[in-house]
Length: 304
Image (cartoon, rainbow, N blue to C red; front, side, top):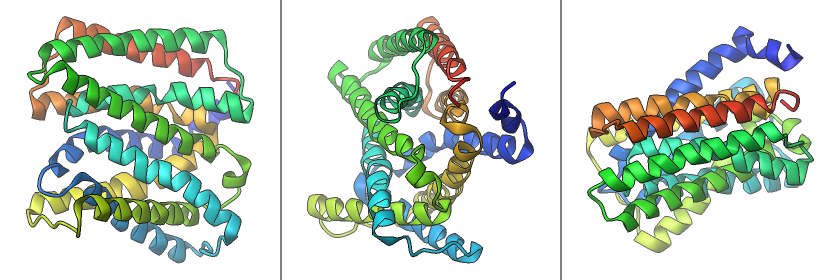
């Protein structure tokens, strides 16, 4: 076992890993409930106002300096806008067209652009096993696409639009994820950088929401605000703090193992709450996608 393998099994890594996997597996169904009265970009804005406020409070509580300098603000904006503005707007929009479970499965392919960008910009090695796993995973997702096209009452163009929006979210998140692996971000306090990254995400979201939809729209339904608190405090402030801590402890490759489990949890929620039906094609696609991702992640053993 490598040092990273040993660190992964330590409670300080394993427990947060289990927690974020369960949290992120449940968020897709909660996001679905956010869609409706409030325009999606305003919902994303509210989510990260809550998350950002929590991170600023946490940074002050733990003594992390919020004075990050010009370089720090530039880095915060460079990862915060793709992660907390582009990524989440694309995901929320995708859930207006396809099931939350399918969005989660497609998002599991985040590993592919993550590794490609890491190879391009960070000189991380790509192995033949990773390429094999990527092909298998892509074939599995293709089967899920076919299943969704057959089962959906929406027009095929609607399903393809949802898939396309999810892939744009994947690419946006990938940019931010790869940035987290750079030394310039690794040496900075997680809480302070997350706080400012979310702040820049809020600014971008609010500007676009106001320009597109006008003044803020409020929904008074209790379920909406309970979901918003869960997404802001638990799925964003807490989960991203845990996730970036895991990345620093075991590397981005080990941390990405969560992508093997999140779709299973998400599609279980989709089965329970959205009447998702597991046909033979869907089961085969899910197994192939997860098997391919497992092969690809195992290929990252040497690189963390």
